[in-house]
Image 1: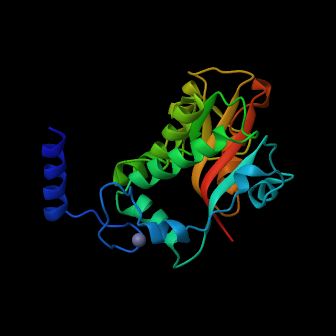
Image 2 (image 1 turned 180 degrees about the vertical axis):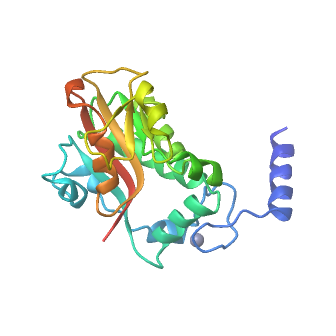
Length: 232
Ligand SMILES: [Zn+2]
């Protein structure tokens, strides 16, 4: 039986070869996503392991976070850009799964990012969600939540860019800034919880700052942040 499965796999690889998302070389189905060489080229940051890392420094003086980190450094024309591009524009949601599993494991072995109740992705506005068909950080967030035994939810935070003011009025709390395109969903009341916000890339931190600001202070929430990549 096992032999039959192996033959089927080999046949599948023959007709539909799996290629490395970094360099397009054909890889074995056991190597998820990347060939060994590309995996070694990933510019890992190790930010998960220490305080005052560059991701936390981006957010200093703007929002209070318990812990923040980014997993890889984003370089133009590098493998990090290639992977984020595959994730965002080429339908390769497995990139999010790949990094989510890996980071989830790293967090478990770290003494930071403790006591997280919810994992929440930065929400896409509906128009974009329809175009793309998926939120590119969904799988990433789900894998992290599974690893650390937290609840993954897309219902707490909403992207209100194209929501009419009238629809908003009844259901949600508009954030203090009128420019804020995110809103906390009062249909899912929470208090005194620790929320891990996840996104694909952090550059200026403005998006993540807006997300945190969308939650009313009275809820006394704690926040941590993880992104797949950070631009240099
Ligand atoms: Zn490769």
